[in-house]
Image 1 (cartoon, rainbow over the protein chains, first blue to last red):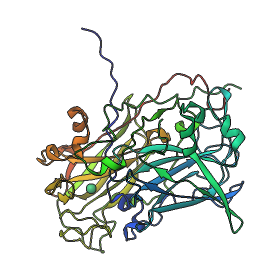
Image 2 (image 1 turned 180 degrees about the horizontal axis):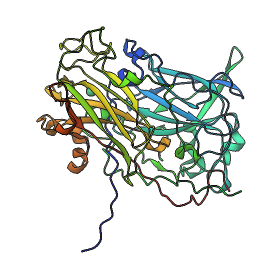
Image 3 (image 1 turned 90 degrees about the vertical axis):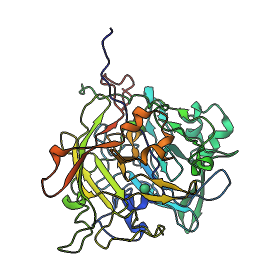
Image 4 (image 1 turned 120 degrees about the horizontal axis):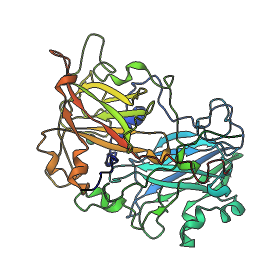
Length: 206
Length: 245
Ligand SMILES: [Fe+3]
């Protein structure tokens, strides 16, 4: 007999189902229960950097909007620092860098306000282009999907980004680039997510 | 300046242990499952870090579903239960101070959600959600009622086993997980197309809470034990440190 390795196994994932809002955004489910819902303010009042809005819709394999999805965003501040004890550096008071949004039940549109993150130090001292990490759950999604939002106006750093460059299929890299437009002076980035189909968004196993 | 060794990267997620994205018998997954393979990433700061929550973010009573939506002096209808356990990682180390959120149907299988139109009655004293932070040993507990089974549109006569939806963070965004807790002895578990998206029966068993008579409050509340295991981390110094040297 050999010795045994005593590792536990990660608990398996299950779909968040259609009523994920009850647990994670009860206001959207139609009732108030908590003194504060978490995740509606990503950057806080003191964040440096450019205030931006990110919007999009998630579509399924038939091209229909997915109306019961919940997305979580995780990002660094404008200096490329995550609000986490293991990341070297300070963030502004009130900056959490995390948020969650749900889609409109009628249209499937989602959107959140934040600040544009700065470039983040990656592996081996290689800089990563500014990006927001996204995690997507919904009915019909058995394991939450991870992807990244990159920014159209960061062409040079995107071209050098070590993660984008891991994607062998160059055409698919474009699915991670949010399009920038100005709306009443505010930078609004459009990031549509396709779960399936020809322009399927790149999802990561992180 | 020397820094203390940082915990390292997360162990790779075992994608054969988790349900595949596409499971024909869970019909909604057919059009919502990516068809290209996932792109495997080595961990960077973006994956190793994750949001931190504290006691200012929640109320101490948010974990008590018996009272957090009830009228003063009243309680929800149904079997009163305690759900408790620990959040651990794959190295069997406790995950302290991490946010656990749950949501569920009431005792008649009805959700308090504007999109739920099931015949089961709403309970005026039951909201159906709770949240808590694990303590320094990774322990958590909730008080609630046992949820009822409910029908859903998949095949025409599918019923979900009694279940509680569970969301956990861990210490890094790569550990983020949502799953469902089932109850020991429920004959609907084996028949459920959502449970059966999980290929391995041993993995399914990890989602079945055990009756825990030792944790009951006699003459008051019965108890179930549910331990949550998140991805483990290498303990060696991260070769390419987060700050990049
Ligand atoms: Fe459910």
